[in-house]
Image (cartoon, rainbow, N blue to C red; front, side, top):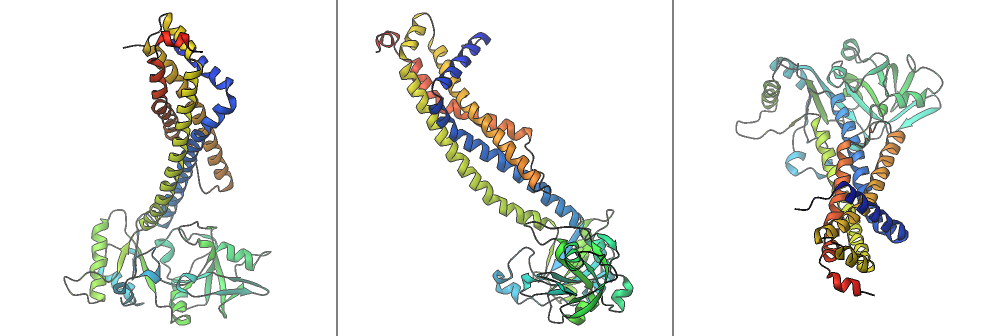
Length: 421
């Protein structure tokens, strides 16, 4: 077994760098594929890691122990629902009261009514000369804000039990709606018209723009559920949200809710549920499906780049072997072994790919820093793990595609090399 000394490694490294310097254009074109492959892997990994952190924060903001009951699977397109889902009975407004009594391990249970563009509805909110379209009007009970912490109050208050009981025309606005309708004044205490009906603004939510996984709180206007029922009787698509206390077993609480729903909807024993029970994890699952396509695309791009770069490395090393045939002969004549020559050319190939890999890592770091600056909510960060993977990929490509030229050089006949013109 041949062990390369530090002096030999330094000599071979300098020889490799000299090869790069002597053929700058050729070397640059050779490492370009490596740069593309490594930079695409590094930058996409950093962005996806940041997006995963963002999605996880969204899930936690929705409530780590918050669960949803709906007629349909969350995160699905209504136009693609199969027949067995479309024929399911709508939820009733009285379900929540029954479940509260039948499920003692559940707390903060609330019914939610929604009127939004995803159901084919349009809403218009006006105040004086200002108006906002494409907003989501939601009917909710006082427990809503406890069930879904994402909807946190910045100013004013949320809907009270008194508001709900007396169907008071009050509304809590998303921050973007508030700023659009009242650009120069505080919205609290002012009146707005929602689809023609007058409401008093009693609260404004914290800013939340949302991102790709759904609309943010900014475009929501929340009114008492009793008002929603009266104003929009045609909006039949209700869902419910509930929380499970920390000291209660989640499966026990969910089982209580499922049994209560089955009794409410008179589902015979042995038949499957005609409703869905889900957690905020459906957002993570939806995101994982979306990132799956990104990962495949990145893998294809990086693989092509690395393949092109690897072929370029093999090509330049074969040319280098041809150009340095006499040098190889001289080295062998003065005692260099096959392993020494093989190691020298392998190191040159690895140096080539490491240069490309280093540039790719720097580009990836620049892309992640740019994304983090332009979109602060996405903490795209270049981790040490992916830097290590980037270097490992570079070395691997150099060794794989450099071995054939290095082995070819090692097996050359020294006498034939010395005669080579």
